Length: 448
Image (cartoon, rainbow, N blue to C red; front, side, top):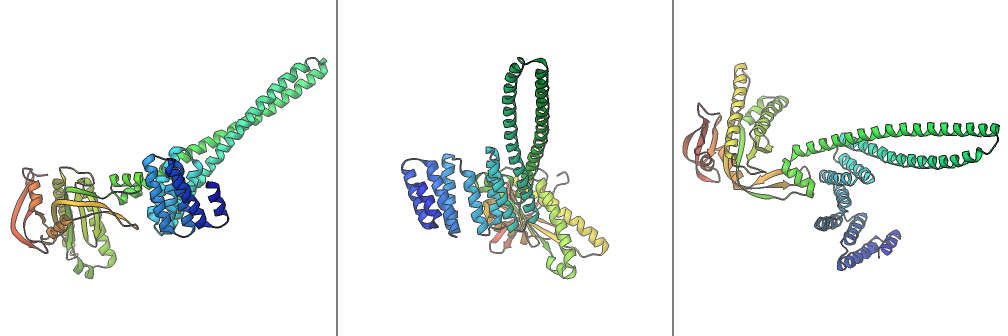
């Protein structure tokens, strides 16, 4: 059936070839020949891609990947690579790039240099489609390095052949030397000198080849170092987009599952007077001030173990207790919020002293359950959803400039925790939520 399917495809009947591979897949499934079944699915997906059925090809490849994971088949790298090619054709370059990255790791683990060269070519194409021309150039350069490594393997084989040939010739010459000993002195001396010359030139050739091999081995070492650095760059780019744990899951599985997290603390910030300030400051000055604040917020969030979720205009959103759950998320979020508030206050004092326009910050915090996961297929991001997010936003909008406003749920998390003092605000109306009990939080004089 396999040969028949290939023959039908060579005649240009792609749909007929897919039917033959479907029969082969069914037969392999019935006989428990899992590797043959998955191989047939992979060929069917390739044929669908050749017929411009990119969605059908992707669905078939994902099913093949699922079956491959169940039995730990050796074709996982090939499936991921073809899935990446399908996504490139759909304009989903970023997803394709990450799939190629996982396929590359599998090929490296298996020592498949030729497969690595093909994957790097596809990965460079994906980067080019996304407009990341520098990254595309780097992947092509790495591909050239691996092609050199393949050439080096061939040279090692050639050197082995030369050495074996040399040893054979040496044995033959030794036999001839014994025969030459029967000749008279002058003829024998002439023959021995000729033999010595042959040994000398053969030895020089072997040494020259050995020197060349040493040079190539050094080049391979540099190539491996370049591959290691490229892997570090790729992982760094991924970790700038996703939390480390989510990135690891995405690389291992090709996807990341959404999770229900029962208790996190969500933090929102917003700048008072930002719209009015945008009418006074030029675009460059406005973006410069916003960048300065958000860069400081990023540092503060990382310092206190929170996860930055996103920015929306002049609003900044972060959360504690995810993707890895912990028991200090409320404390971490409040400490981060107070440090953010103090940073903005210091900048406000400097600008006020210079007579320059400034903005103030409102910060709101709420604790509760959320759903967390990755959304989108282009420029995807890690995000969270749920009523907890909406309530945290209402804590911010119901607060006051220069204050950190928290809900009753967050305050209850801080019961018995030294270092904080709370100012009850009573029941405050929050848009869409009704009246809610809120508190302003500050550090005590002995708090950290």
